[in-house]
Amino acid sequence: MPGVVAGGPTAKILFSRGELHREVGRLAGELDAAYPNGVVLVAVLKGSLLFLSDLVRRMRAPVTVEFLAISSYEPESGRVRIVKDLDSDISGQDVVLVEDVIDTGLTVGFLVGELGRREPASLEVCTLLDKAVRRILPVRIAFWGFEVPDVFVLGYGLDFAGRYRNLEIIAAGQMEDLTGDPDVYVKQLYGRPANDLPR
Image (cartoon, rainbow, N blue to C red; front, top):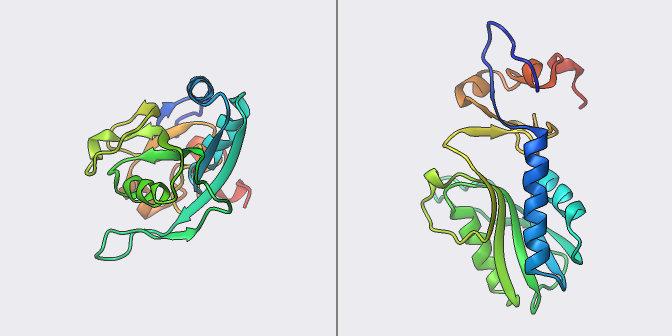
């Protein structure tokens, strides 16, 4: 477990490496049971990459992986758009959309609508983190890991300004701390100064 830096802002560790490993294993087992003949996992870049990688390695059912990337929310519209689309046709196939965290439900609702128009045989959602307290649009989530409160989460693919993605834990940070200094938790969470991190 990472140490705490005395005298400075600290992030709260929400889930350890072991807890993540166990939860991903459970989700992999659920997906294997639901799709013994195979499934297409559609991951949303970049945050879900680490989760997807571990999930796929724990699964025993045949798996095909596809990727989507979306824009940030457009000013004044609250909408996103697809900036990297799937490479393959998913019509007639069982598809699971894989997310790192679902909060308001707006992005997932948009993506489910877009994927549904491509006529998959089935379409479900899997997320590692469910921030249900922030839900605006109801979303059906068939496979989920941990429920989290309304906090800013870091690690295991989740970042702030590109930092913290490669942590093997998930921590909660304060937005005001990160806005003031994106490296504010680096020494605590990595155990070394910011300029020692791989770039």
